[in-house]
Length: 383
Image 1 (tube, helix red, strand yellow):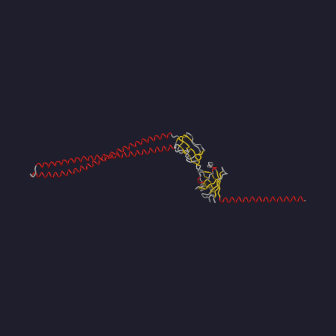
Image 2: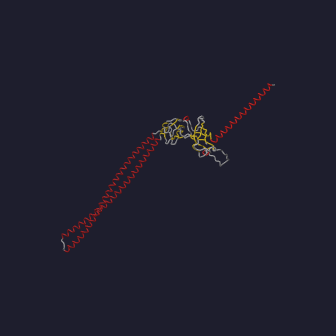
Image 3: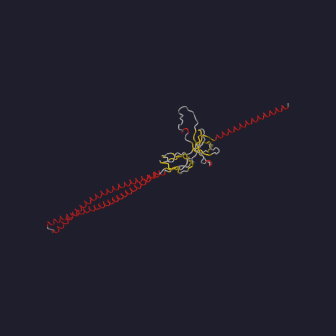
């Protein structure tokens, strides 16, 4: 009887103990749940996170600027490359021949310029001499005109003197000898006057001829100047042709526009390529960033400059730090190939996502390991 009583007491005690443990366990779980929920609530009040994010970066195409045959490929796909490093060489033999032809044309044009300049110099010298001759003849014409005027005055004076002595001779007031001398002086003055007039007329013709010659020489100067200008223009064109060929010759060496990892090979040795044809793509190692697509309900308190924590799926044990750089001016749907048009058909409201650009502080352990397209989880501290 006593044994049964003890057994019942022990069983009741164990049952009570299990009950207390169960209640305590429920309280612990409830407390943990409340703490977790409160922590998530507090975290949600000061943070916004999304796993709709990936690494992006500048993918720079390597293109040819001129047509040509590929002579040499100096880089392997998926290898690091520095800006300015030679990637491809094109066959430049045709360009070299064109350069020599252009240089020969330049030399020929230069000689033509020298000839036209020499012709211009001769024309200018002829025009200068014609101008000097014209001035001298005009000066002689002025002197001849003065001689005519002087001869005319002398003719008038001697004619008066002759008439006076003719009257005196009729009256017997003078001798025949004096009369003859006066008459000879009158006749000499008339001859000198006629000679001066003839000389003046000759000089007039010479002035006209000299003026015509001066005009011809001046026209030659104008023509020669035009020829020199045309020759100089031709020389400039030849020089520009050489510059263009030299530029195209430099373009036969295709170099890396940026530093990074070269990939997406699209060229083979001996292939004929066209201008603008993509040969490689370079992933720039200085332009990696995160594009995080946050819901429109998450960006209310987001601002440029806020810090962010980034976790990559490829390297989950290495957290990265970053900052909000910018917000897209439109939602991702607006930039899609077929943007939605809510004005037609049945409307179903869908939460839109806004792309947010976030910079990355890349640690040394991940240098040259991050690649555009890798998935990420981003948490932005908004408070």
